[in-house]
Amino acid sequence: MDELLTKKENAIYVGNEKFIPFISEEKIQLRIAQLGKQLTEDYKGKLPIFIGILNGSFLFLSDLIRNIELKCEVDFFKLSSYGDKKISSGNVKLLKELNADINDRHIVIVEDIVDTGLSINYIENLIRMNKPASIKVVTLLAKPKSIKYDVKIDYIGFEIPNEFVIGYGLDYAQKYRNLRSIYILSEGKN
Ligand code: PRP
Image 1 (cartoon, protein in one colour):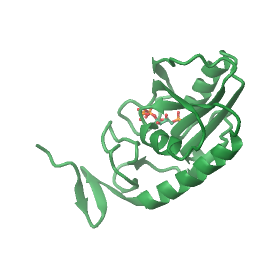
Image 2: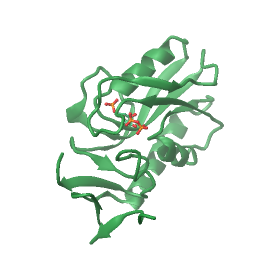
Image 3: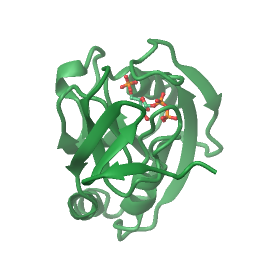
Image 4: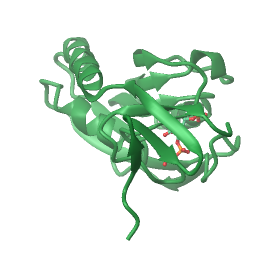
């Protein structure tokens, strides 16, 4: 069986592409605790539904809601836009609908990364059709230089450059989501 990772001096090699440590597990968890505290204050007295966009958001959502000190609910959409490529295909496919009735509910959309904004834009339009009480967006990572769609992000963990990142839910051809920290492409084909 292939070993899980080829690691040398903390870098991760995927073929001839080199990924170096970018955001540590400690930094991620610290920032999520801050976001959780902020959301707990902002949603006091409300019963929010945290809606994760699968697959990428599953780790962030699970850590985030453990930092929410309120009653809350969780549901998921599953989308696919990138396929196995590093650059957005520009198309979104809805692979799983919500189960919850979101009419008149307070919705917090949870993303691992907002890149072009296509996925968030698509999901917000879908959610809006069901007339929720409010919609906010929280993302662990945002690439401000790569946004192409008109989206408002309410809570951002980290703003990052327009580079390819993996780990903590973010994949490379579906792999490496299980890394505990985030790595950035430093050398190789982009
Ligand atoms: C990634 C990520 C976001 C989206 C962001 O999902 O999880 O949902 O791309 O890019 P955008 O702002 O340009 O839409 P992907 O389609 O790769 O699927 P995954 O969540 O299964 O990794």
